[in-house]
Image 1 (tube, each protein chain N blue to C red):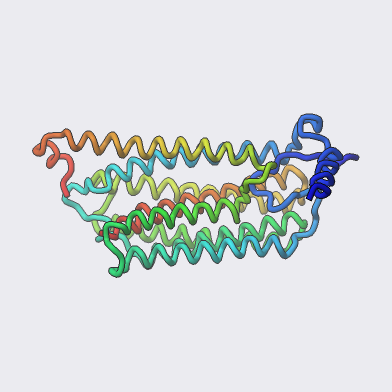
Image 2 (cartoon, chains in turn purple, green; image 1 turned 120 degrees about the vertical axis):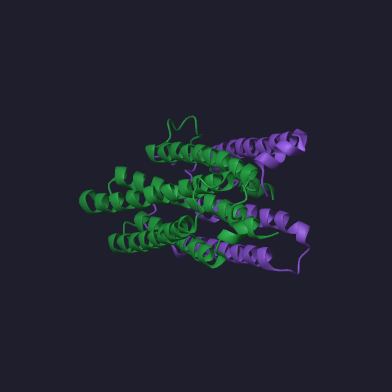
Length: 129
Length: 210
């Protein structure tokens, strides 16, 4: 039987090919992911509570840390890589990210525009601080 | 250098190309389909996130996030979910090598951590509702309970799924259908953790920082 190359399924740790041993390197991949995720989560908690950082930059910093952690989860837990056998998975992910970006950025942009154009007295009715 | 390239070429030709290999095995097709479902689920969550972000300041004179959220409890919830994602990964390794005992062990750990997460979340909700911060109180709270509650429902569904899968492993052993379902479960569980990262940051951390 000739060896065939298929795309890798999302979640496959390494080329599966009837591998019947959970190797220690696979455990290592998950452990690295866990350590990185814990570091990023702890950093986020610290950034949200510290007074050492420039306050207006905190939200941006938190967003960057969250996106980094999502990347860690994708690579180390879901095993989405940039390898040629992973193109389908990455393309589907890229499309999902595009839609997520459109929905979130679009909603926030439109609603910010609306509340800018809304007369102040109406605004107070709707958005009590 | 050129020798290496030549060897690489030979190696490639020895393997049948994707189109010659015929349809992909069911294992790959199922996981890819489930991956697309997960992405659509994430798109649904993005709509809830957008709703929450728009309404986060519409507290109608009621309590704000900074007054309601308990960061210690949220940190424990995050720890539970993150660890359960890790143990779920170890469980899928145990499944790959068909180790029954290890599979049951990591499944139980994953289940307990997930249940602990859920218990902490329910306690948090009960505490908020007892203090008058119900979903009817303000648009902010409606959006909060919808977003966080939807994630909680997904976790509940995941726990039921995990219990059912363990029963299937016990009855049907590691047959291919059961393995594919377990693979989908672990994808689902990891994806829930990714959504929680967004939730944790947008709702809890940005909610309490100035």
